[in-house]
Image (cartoon, rainbow, N blue to C red; front, side):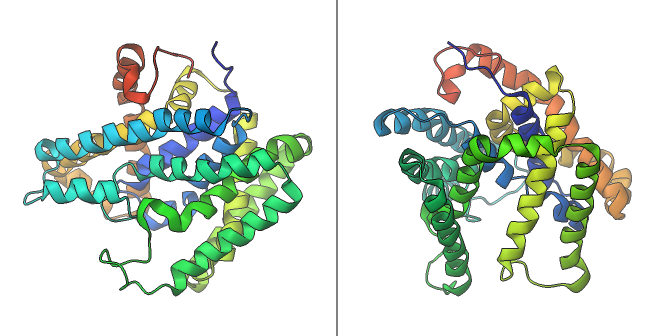
Length: 339
């Protein structure tokens, strides 16, 4: 029995995955980064918490997440590394070292398809937090733990670990940060959503948009370090998530948006080699046009958006093939075309 999908959730995921693909492009710009960074990953964690249905035993919960997240990560991340032999366009690569780095899963240290591992790890404490179901206690506690995670990353000497950062294997340093957005997403559904919907009108969307643009513009104007002023980032993310949810609940979806939004996992693991090929073609066959676009923030930003949307259409074919004929690759026993 298939679970009925929530249209606005798939629309949020569509928006976020477009920006995920865009974030990896050479043509992305600082202005685009300032716009999407506050919500394009936190939005995924938020809706992951929103759609969670409690009731399974921990064993069943862990098995589901292993099949749905850990297995696709292991399969596609290692396939991605093997494909680098053929379509990376970079020589002198130590593939044994790449495989080892992938298994260690330290953020920014060869952590291929890291998001799936991070979500898997965050789902472990999330299970117990939601099972306890005391939002007045758990939300403040998780907020504090999230802040402590940031403090750890700021204060921990980068020279302690051989990879040159304070990050821990399997993204453990950030698990409470991810957990916070998942918990907020879960309780948004039961505690806030109805009131949120009552205020979701044109005027409120304009106000939130202006407020969001204002708050993300401040760091560019006064040049403060957001890694140390991390509390500021929470306000950016809350406004950004509120904005995309408002938009997603307002616009009418279509088959294209619904398909991409329902298959963001596959888009996440498949887009890396595609954009590598696209950028290689642009830089060799259309180098004049490409370099001209990159030389200007506006044209470079527009090119990044166009490439990202183009990739979302190109990937429809392999995503459909995997869902239809190779569902085992994403931990499924049968095709669920509505997912």
